[in-house]
Image (cartoon, rainbow, N blue to C red):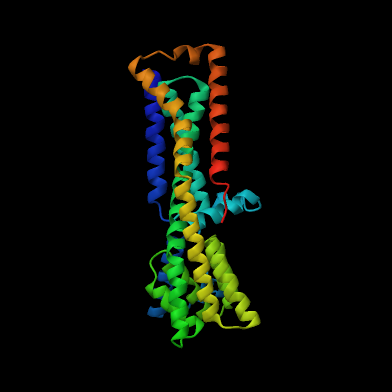
Amino acid sequence: MILLATVFGFIFVLTFGIVVIGTAPSRDEKIFEQRLAAIGVIKSGALEVQLEASQLLRKRATSRFGWVEHALVNFAPMQRFRRYVMQAGVNATAASVLVQMVIFAVIGYFVTFFFTHFLPIDLGGAAVAGFLPLGRIIFVRYTRMRAFDKALAHAIDMMARALRAGHSVAGAIELVAEGSPPPAKGEFAEVFRQQNFGMPLRDALLQMVDRVPSQDLRVMATAIIVQRETGGNLVEILDRTVFVIRERQRIQGEIRTQTAQGRLTGWILTMLPVVMGLLINVVDPGYSHILFTDPLGRKMIYVGLGMIMVGGYFINRIINGIDV
């Protein structure tokens, strides 16, 4: 009873703290309110306020947990993780995702500890719960990249038709930004805005490649940059680029069709021991109790899980080893 009350109190305090932190105004909101107040003062003429030039510069998005990013600013994995979150296109920062992972891991540990006092299982529950925010980022990023690759060929074809009709490169990019589906629409619109602000097309394209790590987009950006530096018929280059991208996507679809049975086999072989173990224990509670209480049984669990992960890794490498 004491343990239940302790766990309930901890979860209650943790949930209340999350709500308080989540509803508090962010740093950007505070700065926005300060700027509105300064504009109001200037309009009323009661006080002369000199705006610093730095306020007019575009700043990187921050969050309430910016201190985490400042603490890990020189940590190379943090830089890669920040870029990974940016590529997902979610309304979050790398620091907020890390804090969410820690909070979910703590909650997962205590929830698992409430049902079982076996430390490896408790740590496993914490790891699974802590992975949920990162899993969401991975899924959103994967979905966004696939949607972008699907719309890229049409966007390049639209750009080629616009150039053939007499538009400039900037005008063609604007037309693509207006007529493409998301997320290609937002990325090409960002390139168009950067060009309007005076950024060279080369730098704008390279930044888009950094935001969207698509191999097809890299091919398009390389073709446009090479044409801008060496000359040539850009319309013909874009037409050939569209042909290469569509052929590549066609071959990738055929490969996925041919390897569908192998992927299904890998999922079955990986999940079958776990699912069967859960079903057997549901039908006959306590059937696997000796595996968790006996030292030899625990070693067998560790060895079995390790072999499952190794087998899943090699199956994945065999199936996804074909690159186009």
